[in-house]
Image 1 (cartoon, chains in turn green, yellow, red):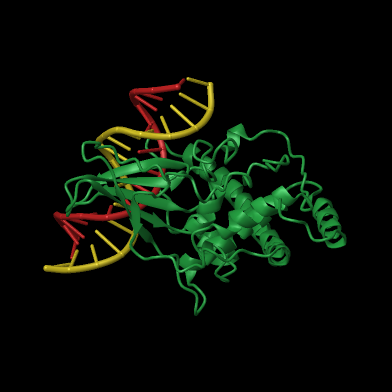
Image 2: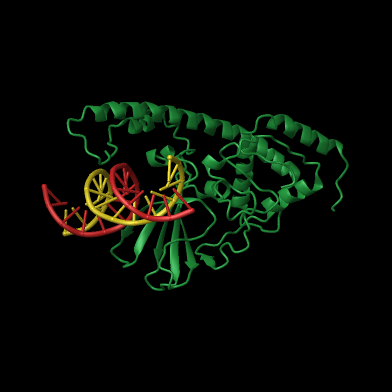
Length: 299
DNA sequence: CGAGTTTGACCGGCGC
DNA sequence: GCGCCGGTCAAACTCG
């Protein structure tokens, strides 16, 4: 990366190595439904800045919601602990959430119902907004390789495996391992028709996942670190006058697989950038410098 | 020792 | 109500 970028425990975007185009990524996969984005069309700096401004305000709303969620989660944990202490013969087995627990209470009373969070979808989504669609991906693998591992570049934690009725090969269940509140999941199962194919089903807000949770092993020297590995350097240095930085940023966005992904790429950039102390000042400085400067010649 | 995986139990939806 | 089934949880385990 040309300039030290940001790390605040949430997002990290490597503008130097395009995170959407790892050399081998999806090279042997085929999407059941094709993207329709314009691959050649990039976003202008103004477009990007407009999106940043718009998304910054949306990001603030999300941050408030997360804060509320965490607060209620802490309250719920405290109550559950006291509940368990009352058990006469506590077992080592977990207790499943019940309908009348605090979480459900939170959803019932606090959900904004504006289609902006997981609760909204489960609680009754607004009209005209589609629920989170799942996306199937077929990945060709070595038939002799019986593992249900798909190297898609993201950080997953396996939480279950099950043999289903219509397929003798087990189905593996994965959750996003980057953030506890991320609801993205994927299922991996060998195709019953073609053992050399793995059927990967992504569920949840996977666009968010596309840009957030890259594993460092797949995104070059930078990429996403796990929360425990986040460096303490939160220094922001954003120089849009730097032609290399500027071009890399535009290329990274323009090369995304679809317009939707481009938009969410920008979204996640905004998410990342707005978390940096002093970012706003850096952005103002960068933009004003960009405006004042003459057109930057292509190197 | 922490993070990730395994695996059996548990839960809820659905059909009968 | 009962059984089946897919999905999820979490203690135990493994690994680096």
